[in-house]
Length: 310
Image (cartoon, rainbow, N blue to C red; front, side):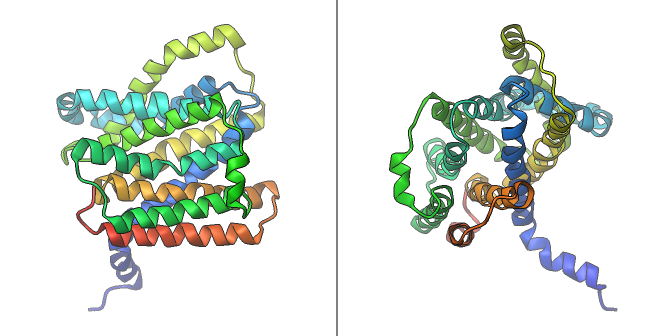
C-alpha cells in the first residue's frame, strides 16, 4: 500500500522541521518589530512588554495548568535555569529592545539584531569551549552583509555615518539577554514539558517586570491605547510571545543554539518585506539582493555547522 501524498509530504519535510519552525518564528518576530514601532507611540515600553506577556500567559493557561502538576517536579529540578530563562527571555530581552527603540532609529534596531548569531556563538564558545567551524563563521558573515545591504539601502558604507546613542546600548543589552536565553534553552532535560516551561517562565518574567512597571506607571501614567494599538498588543501576545517562542524552543533543542540563532538574520529581511506589504513601502533591488545574501549565508552556515554543532 502506497502512502498518501499528505503522509509522503510530511515524511519528506520531517528532516526540515527545525528549519521550518525557525522560519515561522522569524516571520512572527519580524511582525513584532513592525507592530511594536506603531504601538509604542501610545504604549510605553514596559507597559507594552507587560501587556504582551499578560496576553500570552492567559492564552497558555488553559493548556498549561492541567499539565502543571505532572510537570512541576522537573521544573523544580531546574529552578535555577528556569529563573534565568524568565529573567533573560521574558523580563529583559524585549523590554530592553522596546526601551531602546524609544530613542534609537528603527534601522539601528534591525541592524543590531544581526549581531545575535555572533553573540550566541561567542557566548557558547566562552561557556562550552566549543567554537563554530570557520565555514560557519563565513556563512554568518555573508548573512550579516545581506542585512547591512538592506538596512543601508544598498550602500553598506553608510553604516559609518549612523549616529550611535544610549538607545543603541539598550538594544544591544536586549540582544545579549536573548543570546543568554538561547544558550539556556540548550540541553533542557527531555522530560521537561516545554509548554509548562514556557508558561512558567512567562509567569515568573511578569512578576519580575512588576516593580519596573509600577515605576513606569507612576512616572507616565496608565496608557490608553486605541483599538488598533490594542489589536497590536494582542498580536504581540499571541504570535511573537507564544507561537514563535515555542517554535524556537523546539528548534533549539533539536539543532542547537548557534544554528538556530543564525535564522534570526531572517527577521530584518522579513520585516522589510512585511513593511512593503502592509505599510506600502516600495521594494528596491537592494532588498532582493540582501535577501538572497541572507538566505545564502543561512544555507552555508547550516551546511558548515553539521549535525554536531552547538
